[in-house]
Amino acid sequence: MPANLLDEDTLIDDPSREREYHWTLNFGPQHPATHTTLRLVLELDGERIVKATPHIGYLHSGFEKLGEHLNFNQYVTIVDRKNYLSPPYNELAWHHAVEKLLDIDLTPRCKYIRTIFGELSRMSDHLLCTGAAALDLGAFTAFLFAFNTRELIYDCYESMSGYRFHPGYTRVGGLLQDLEEESVRRIQVVLKQVTRTLRDMDRLLTRNRIFVDRMRGVGTLTKQDAIDLSCTGPIARASGVLNDVRKDMPYLAYPELDFQVPYCTEGDCYARFQVRFEEIQQSAKIIKQCLEKLPSGPVNVPIAEKFPLPDKATAYNSMEGLIQHFELIMPNRGMGSPVNEVYASVESPNGELGYYLVSDGSQTAWRTRTRPPSFIHFAVFPHIIKDHLIADIVAVLGSLNVIAAELDR
Amino acid sequence: MSTMTDPHATSLEHLRNVLTPNGLRTDVFRDNLRVHVGRDQLITTLKALRDGRGFNMLVELGATDYLGYPGRDASAPRFEVHYVVRNIDTLETVIVKVGVDDPAPVLPSVCPVWRGADWMEREVFDMYGIKFDGHPDLRRVLMPDEFTAFPLRKDYPLRGRGERHNFPRILREQS
Image 1: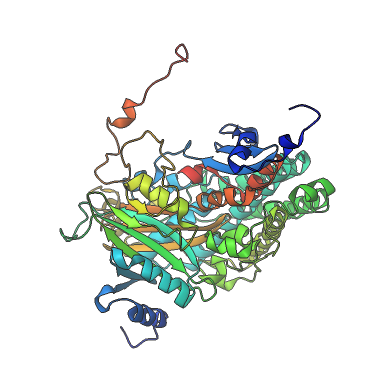
Image 2: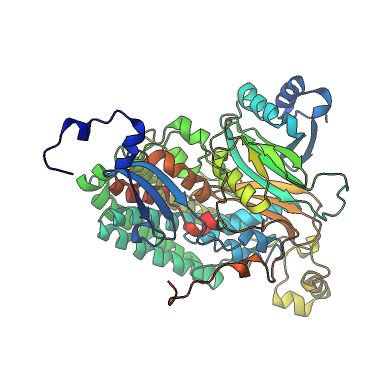
């Protein structure tokens, strides 16, 4: 364009001519700021985004189809791989749905251990999300503090279940194994460390001029839009929707614990950051209470209920254990289930994670429909990014915490 | 209905007033209340729930293929789409189910009622081939655009050779 503009260069009356100035930019699917494989096609007016069209599915792996071929216990390894920032909560959600279908009432000890396990993952998820949001905006140190602490949480997973990344710790009617003294010590290390990390991150970020300027007023989602677009979790709570499945439809040990549900009313990226940051503190509070109140007793429901796999000693040394083991392992037997369907959801770190589970009476689901929070929240993205600048994309994406494995399944 | 206080009594009463007398079939399993409606009653039901009873959030939308489902009546429709709706103030949750049959399954879109249904309906179309009438942008969402089958249907195999082997392979030398 020439340096000296004529009137006809700047004044555009004809709306069809206006589009000629727009150009299209492809963002992703392997852009470092998208963290995973997301692709956006942006229609730009200068640096202003006129329209963003997400193209997803690069990581589609047919998890829901696999759920129709793996039994209730086997599928836990697949759900782990959906939201890989917080695998434990995916497991809790899956077995929560299965146990609702089978009408299993867990033992108190199991409820508490699962609560601890889930809240550890919430801390881990939020630490990475807030850390990575800062990383994308150029604050590298806060990210390293957060990641360092996540390493300790992985140590907890490892001592609880034997696996660091995808624990696969829950089983129908119980857990893989009981919580041991060493795991409790490791969890206490996390609780001690996380206070320090939060203090450091708070000093680095909360009143950081650059960080606040990039986040405040960016990607605003109003309360009405949040409800209309089916948002849940920290994203809805940052817009003033006070819903949390842990309080609304209590499960596990949550009704017996004292914790608060943080919320904001601004609905922008900074509000989402604040909500997540406060939720880490609440999670630490929950875990502390769980460790104090941790009941004794068995972690699995009694073998007579024919759901949990008996441990080695029981299977080898008692008749009932052996029969039960045989019944569950043989492919033509297994646990029976009602020919019915159920929707059950839990509050995962990202929002409401639900399963619509249809059962045909066998121990393999007929249909495992996931309600993936990332999928629903990414659908919101084109609405809230409109009229922002290209540089705001990373801030908004970081605050939505879209996990491509859960998005595409 | 039992004599116990039913948390959904008022909502059901409201639906009975709005819908035709035979249009409503309900059942309860665990804490799920399911309302089965016909295709022509779907939008009326959902709008009645939203406007009359404050069910302002569409929590979840998905489909199931019941081809060969044990105990399924042969005359029953092959697919069912479920809409989980919630009143976020009273936390009352209702599952609305609607059947849709082969060939050419079509349902009215609920995007005008809840904008959140946009991608969820696209996913149902992508996986089951159920078309949503009135959807603003009904394209495949997870599978590639040139894909021709609907992978979550029960007659689509988990393993085997299929249309994915027909994708053009572009080698480095040819590009």
